Length: 217
Image (cartoon, rainbow, N blue to C red; front, side):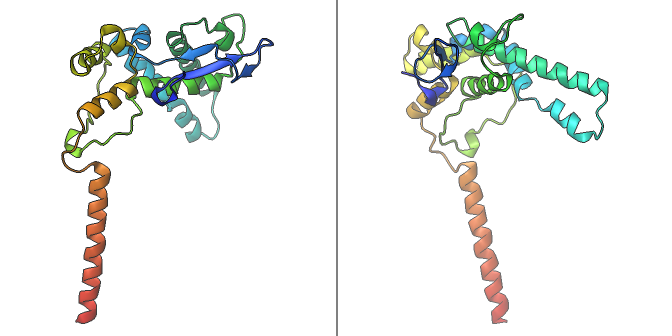
């Protein structure tokens, strides 16, 4: 069973080589164990930054007539993103994904943009986490980290969730967040959205009161 809610993606290939959704041949799972294959903690963050970078697009949109140097810069950025995306797909699948993403001498079945989209989704679910949970303002983490220390999350899962080492390694960040939130729900104070709603409501009531006061003068 493919769990798309925690970030798993399945791609199938028919015998004639076309993409299909009937038979599952390739399953991509952005688990802690798979993402650790990307390298050191800093390399994982760098991969995330590379895939989400819009530097090349911003440079092109600012210029009316891009010159050869700008074109070369954009091509280099795109090739770096594509290489990073292919590496992510390789790490997140137990099968040889060459038929999908291609090799140095042969193109794969997938379009480059599709490779980028899938890789970004895998990192979203596997590194950032796409869990919709309640987080109060006081517990929001707005700091930036240059490293993604998977070992810390694996150890936390073992200690707080009672999982074995193998079970903890198989978690994605999204699943980890959901499990931790279920065990330790955050009921302290207002979330950012709730706070903004309260402030907006107060301002509206205050404006109405002032308007009524002016009429009575």
